[in-house]
Length: 312
Ligand code: LMR
Image (cartoon, rainbow, N blue to C red):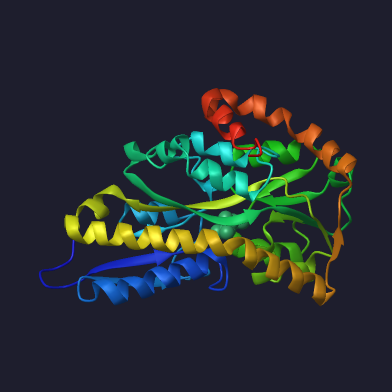
């Protein structure tokens, strides 16, 4: 609660750099709130895990130490199993398909899937599709065997790497660069913008353009905090969030393309392009994971996600 006459303070914490889709979205949100709700709401943005890291951020939200987060969809497993749908490898044909799914009813319902835990989903923000990086060229699934890969805390991602004989290691985002540099893990999976903004390409000589999975975000707040604000303030904030969401989702692909170009121009990493047959080999190894998680996610949710792949 804000004290009488004082603005509501929204601490928006995240783990990536400012010059990424999420980082830019947080700053645009701050700017629009400043322009439209000055004196009523004040937004403070804390990038790069400076206030709280990804291992503790959800608890910090529920303790009202931060008021908005945008964790990747892979980080909600403690609160709902349904969002694991976004982690299923090779589920979506491309980022446009993910975008279509995010605007459909099933995804809108998933914004409410953590209501029992007091978590209120506000929007989906895009980053992009993930690429596999490593200390050696990964062309076929067997090339990953025995290598340790950093993963986000997701059972599906763990199963995905187990499926190719690799060793998944859960690490907070803030530790990825130094763990790769120290050789604690040999590989990772990230969208181009996260690779570039953390300089991971400097310690990953090969990047396979696999586009095998998605890394997008859910903008979340706590129901208790959100409902503590007057209706008019909430409505204005929700309008701003809609505007920012559209901007983030319009620009994310271009930012990833820019960072892909920068990485390749730097010469630090070599691009491994997969032939259709090689990509199919990864797909075949990883796809059994869908079956293993169908009960937890719900066959209906997976079916709804698959329908967006039909080209129109
Ligand atoms: C990761 O941990 O790899 C990502 O969730 C980081 C982020 O927020 O993009």
